[in-house]
Length: 297
Image 1 (cartoon, rainbow, N blue to C red):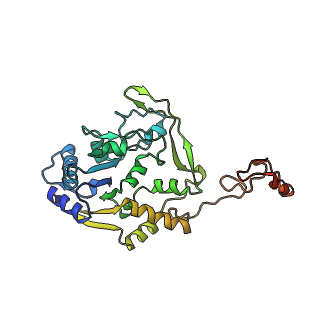
Image 2 (cartoon, rainbow, N blue to C red; image 1 turned 90 degrees about the vertical axis):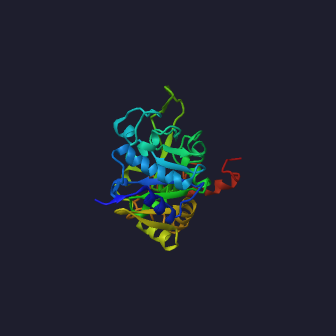
Image 3 (tube, one colour; image 1 turned 90 degrees about the horizontal axis):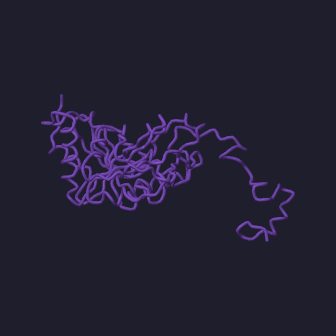
């Protein structure tokens, strides 16, 4: 069995471009890397990684991890901010439970931040998973880095669903969620929502290969070997803006194939006749009585 050391972790992170004061959004599968020398249990294993990451980022740096709770929707249970565990893996759950960690409030798609700017990213957020004041929007504003340990390089493209929401891609819609988070023992009255795919298109697999290839070809992904796997890192804003440019030419870049939209049904529902009181082509002359906002004078 191949062991890694905390010094080796620090070296790999530095080689991939991480440094002091950065805000880093991390996707991890640490099992694929191998055991850490001297880490006798799961807590020690995770502590070694957290310690190495924070050593590289320094006291002014911040680590952010996904602490999604898809089980809330799957089993129709409460989201309790302080208690509901994340199924995203051993390391995100470890970070979530650290003293001083700040978890954002969202019933399905929370993030947890640890470090100097934890509150800046994960407190006083909006009710949308990806909209203004969401943790993802704040990662973009903060010029964060995306870090990938033990997973495929395409994770370095960062907040891909944030990108889908920002580009208003036609296979997505804003879903109103029934779950109102419990925070400090009190159920919040606000309603939360998230950008998701239309159910009828859920069978089309995601495929991020073309996006990752383009970002990689532009020098946007840095890497370093670590144990049995690799570390990847990218600039969140660079990846986001690269994705926006690519999606202008191909709105289905992130899918294996285009959705089979049917004309006349949402989201490809055709003319707005009867929605704006213009019943059809024969009534087109009525447009002259509308002002520039579309209201009749």
